[in-house]
Image 1 (spheres, rainbow, N blue to C red):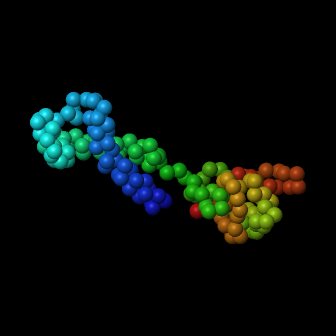
Image 2: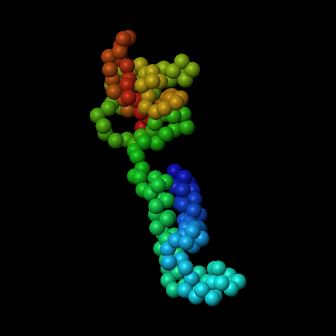
Image 3: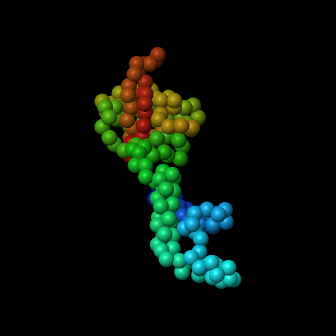
Length: 171
């Protein structure tokens, strides 16, 4: 998770640094704001380096840094880094793993689960076994459980007896 956040920040920095220069160039070439016109038209007309001309403008570097910071913050917000991390995390299989939060569901241990057939049994805390089908597991795509995993679930009375619903793996 941290590696993903680092990549987002790095990409945002790499986009934010040249963004003000690109915006200034666009405004300058389309005849935009007076802010981007040179104070000394004679110097601008000569063949001097544009970077040197930019740096010589009063407040140009500060304005550039403010613009970089503004673009960086906008990109961070747009990339979703400002969102708080949820309490769920996906496993590679699509099954949700969640923090152990008391939400009223029962806890149990996976007795066995046949991945090919998509069902298995969970042993409740009282020792009773409950049927579990893969569709009852929280997540998307290929959802499965491993023997011995701690899980949280709700129990309903199914067609053939007790059945686990709303199953999630507990960290």
